[in-house]
Amino acid sequence: MRDSVIRVENISLDFPLVASGLRGLVSTVVGVISPSRRRNFRALDQIDLDIKEGEVFGVIGNNGCGKSTLLRSIAGIYTPDKGRVLVSGRPFLLAGLGTGFSDQLSGRQNAHLYGSMLGHSKQVIDEALPEIIEYSELDEFIDRQLKTYSSGMKARLGLAVASTMQPDVLLIDEVLGVGDPIFKEKSKLRIQKMVEGASTVVIVSHSFGLLSDICSRILLLEKGRIKCLGTPQESIDAYYGR
Amino acid sequence: MNPAGENPRVAQVRELACLTTKRHTILAPFVIARDMWEHRNMLENFIRRDVKLQYMNSIVGYFWSLIEPLTLTIIYYIFFTMIVVRPSEAYAFWVIIGVLNWAFFTKTLTTSTASLMSARGIIKQVYFPREIFPVSKMFSNLFITCMSMVVLIPFMIRFDSEFNSNIALIPVGFALTGCLALGLGMALAPFNAKFQDVSHIVRISVRAGFFLSPVMWTIEMAQEGSRAAYLDYILLNPMVIPISMVRSGFTGTSFHVEPFFMWYSVIFCVGSLLFGSMIFYKSESKAVKHL
Image (cartoon, rainbow over all chains, first blue to last red; front, side, top):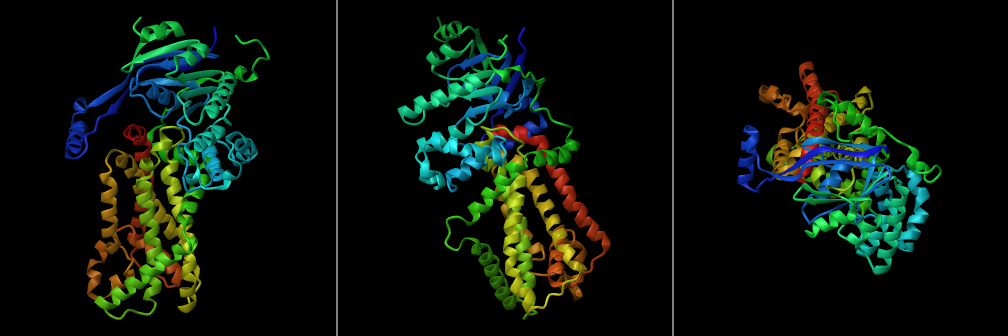
């Protein structure tokens, strides 16, 4: 029996619905007085998963079905209201390349800032910098302010820094799809390399072709509930209602 | 099972742990202190960013942090002369010390209150202890304030500041100011994520607090003659003692209040940091859902 790496124990997660203006204040006061009358949006409803070492686990579903919320719960960003998530080691979430970048700072400074957010020491980032510059094809742009960058350049820098991580547990949230076709191809390769280096991967994507190639199992979510959990073919069939 | 030698990293099997487990709220100050130490490289980078952004893209850069308190001091000096009496010559010196300390307080309070909201992009993508946002704001403002203290040198020469043991009160006064501002900011940041109104309330309160704190006036003025009747009420403001401490450190003249009020201020400031950190620790995970 292989060891569990991610165990999602029957989690539910609500997002509070807060109206703006006076109505929001009134509903908050009401919510404090009687918690049962709080208005919530249930993003995840009794999700129970056991992901084993060595698995590449796919998650599919329509927009707003809770895919990203599930991934963020595994990453520790959201705390579930019920149940708990157990992970071995520290998972790394690869999502939204270039978030946390400051437009005013240079590429180099941003690489240091983002690298430190990922938990790298200064020395590690310094050592990785030549490779980051080479991969992101920024050359002399690395010392210019980020506001002079195109969105593709930002994405390349983001992925270059993020891929210095070699996590055991890798969580990917639909990051392909920025930049020119050549970079798309290049980023695909880089992510594939990260996937190979990690022992366990959870990947959220809309590209079923990619998922059925690499995944051992796929989870289909619908309105925060598990609709289907099985082989890639089973889940994709379930998605199309076959 | 992976065959041996295929991927050595796979072989490391760690125990399953829950990332979001929280310690008891009472322990929050210790947990936060430990987290800040463990993430000191990240903290340093956040501070560095804030300080750089402060001076970047401006022609005179660093000098803005000198021009700002100087301009305010000139305005207050003229204003004070107009409405009250001709103040002592050293009044400008007293005011500029007050201005620096008060600016440190307000900037720390407002930026740390808004810190979760302004970092929501990062918070939703990367997980690390969120205390780092308000704490880094306090340190970057402290750094900027220290840099602008250069402006005091000409005043110290002009008014023959006497260096004595009072100088030890400068770091104490700033530490108390930082504790109070960060404590309040940490307590308010999670609520600001839910209702942006908190930021507005803070801004207005800070305006009122300016007049209630010894920025334009000094504690000696409040102790004079008939005004002394209100002294006990004035000293309920925990910022009176820290500002007076810093002022006394730079001018070299001591100030006297009842020890009770000294302790009141110290306990108030340190206590608000402890309580603020507990509130933050307890409510940040819920607040993140509002971002």
